[in-house]
Image 1 (cartoon, rainbow, N blue to C red):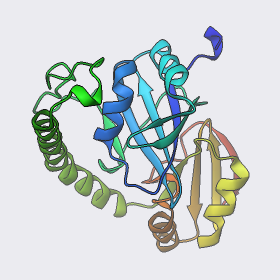
Image 2 (cartoon, one colour):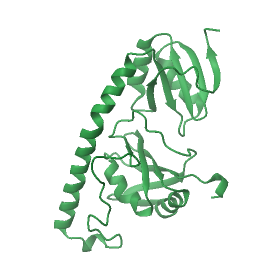
Image 3 (cartoon, rainbow, N blue to C red):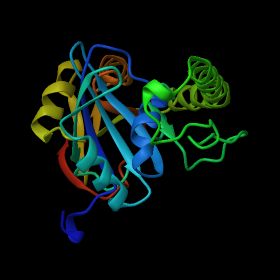
Image 4 (spheres, rainbow, N blue to C red):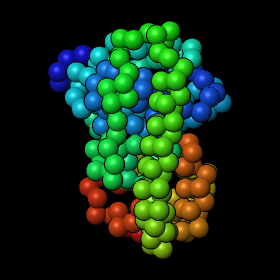
Length: 241
């Protein structure tokens, strides 16, 4: 990968119907560098797609080189590619789908070293007692993260619901035409703007916007937004003009 095209974000595709968690991703991909953000943006019946942001592009490239076209997490087929995204934004993303390790938490995340796991140690050499202890400690971390973040996300969403609403969609690996096809099903679009990798969609009513959010939040990276008209970008639809 050339330096000008380098990205610290890796796109991960896992061929599985299993539930993939932030902690399981940390265990596998954390061996290749310091992970700063994780975003599980698509979970289907046969495949899960994830963005993983590393501290620098070299670490992301190492993960791509080592894990692409391999099997991880109990024989799951794994493909890893460089993403077109330069960084991840996790505003109002539920903690079950996203994790921002750059935010200061009221506790410290243990590293593999803290958990007494040697990265070169084979699975057969790890005792059952040690594995049980690791699972227990990781479970406690997930619970602590949930208690710390969930209430703040709920309060933020409640405040946003009380405003004039617009749908903010992160394009990711979707084309603009695909975004428009998905969002136009839920009402008349009266305002449409593209700002780099983001698309802002305003419907004829807040009710339509809310319905679109509820239906699309498990398919796309979406959030409710307001005061969006001042955001620089290319306006494609504006029925007020």
